Length: 335
View 1 (cartoon, helix red, strand yellow):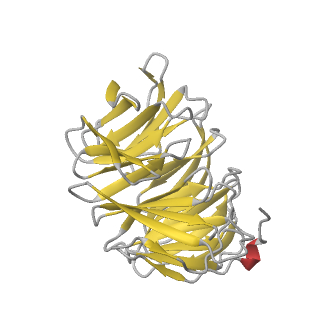
View 2 (cartoon, rainbow, N blue to C red; view 1 turned 90 degrees about the vertical axis):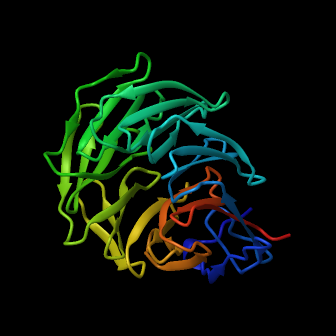
């Protein structure tokens, strides 16, 4: 299937039909360009959480989504059917982060209870509980080789865990500022962290050395995401702006107001051509990652968007919200 050039992607607003969950707008997204007919976009609403949902992640195979939230559970969903595959219980408070290992066999979760849990995905059981943080764990990420887990807590501490023996390395952190969020580059070599009020720092994972610090503006940074080539960093701020920075050097490639209210989540498509953002306005927006031009809007959530992730194929986007739901936006060519 031939791909259209990025500048030909012109997406209208997409509004979810909560009853049918099936509609056919004129939609062209990176990875499904070249459709001879209008693509069919199917939206599935995944309901099961009792409270707001704070985190989502796709398995490497793309057939399972993990979600986690304030109800203290991690839930596994079948992407094809939207059916709940299982509920992982073990945290004693809200769960703020989830991440799959590169082989899809393990899932890490971090929670307000200060623990990181490693789950056997197939069995639905806890493999290990990693203790060492003294504050709630906001973020978790596996390195690509699956040997190391990175975790960050609200108190500003970053920890690296050797998963072969669950050994915890001494914490490294950026001063006494409160920690907001982090993102691990796809190459596994670089880590970006955000601390209050709006400082973005870039770290070398191997040496735990800070490579750069980019002061933000007066608005709190809510989310960051690396491009697939690990060279660019998308930054979402509470003033509704989204910026694209060069990882090394900090040069701003573009910046614009993306959402009414706060911008809360960002995610790149696997080919790096599309950037998705979510905000307190309940909308998910799709942007040309090169130019920053808006390409479409996905609506249906009733409250703030808290997390976004693309499937490995790039044809499905998952969004999480404080409205207690997870939504799957399947973007495929029409028949």
